Length: 372
Image (tube, rainbow, N blue to C red; front, side):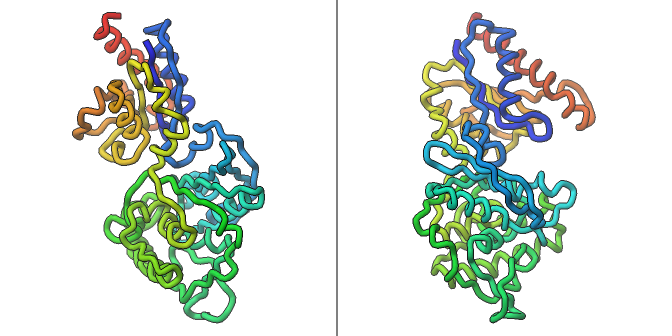
């Protein structure tokens, strides 16, 4: 029997790599002779470089507060793999979430470092950002000049989410010339537009620390930025699918850097040659911290289930929590790992044991159905 173990991370408790190894141990406890393949995954956010097994290049950049930090990007098969979260991720701000004042400047520095090292095929994983500045900070790091409405002919400034509406104009004259020779691919796990009720500010900024009042200001700023971008590029990004990813970075990079926007999980599955790994498989086990309706809309679990269904391989989801919704025919079953009423902190601490026992039970049931 061949079983693929393809979890995303269980955020707050287990990395994708750790989860896959626990799953493998549980499978072997039931089916010691089974062929198991650990394929830890991400959907275009933090952890993508590790999941791909890319070599890491150390870089010194700025965090969302413009403080220096040690960061990195990955190298794989002639591509530079950049995780935006490695410079501007939510874990870097801790309890001090502030999308009104955080900047994506550090992401631009990561890109510049890759260019310095001769990289021209650049893949950017956009998940997990702490910013909502429409990528203005990153563009500033790459040489774009933003001028303030109160000083339109003065010194350029670095916009943040809270000051996007203060931009008077954008000058791209001094944008890094090497960008013209670079190819950018943006990996997204969302399809939200840049602004509006389903846009970057209203949907994602609250989890980045924005108040209701902040959300209104951030959205107005992104509307204003869209106008600035249109003047500079002659492209309307207002309805661009996925343009709201990473606080609007996808929209500005699409228009000003010529970036392609692609599904994060689909691209990562291709890079892992997942379809080939599926050949001859009897079962796929995947999972994440919380399985809900969003899981099937561009997330790792949904991407895995879709590919497996295409080859007639059943998929079982093991998750920290499972919400009731119609998950269709691509998923054979789903199981929550929490085994009793318990505080969240305790559940996180016991996640390894909970995951092991749940996978063991699920595989035992599958083995019985197969007459093993």
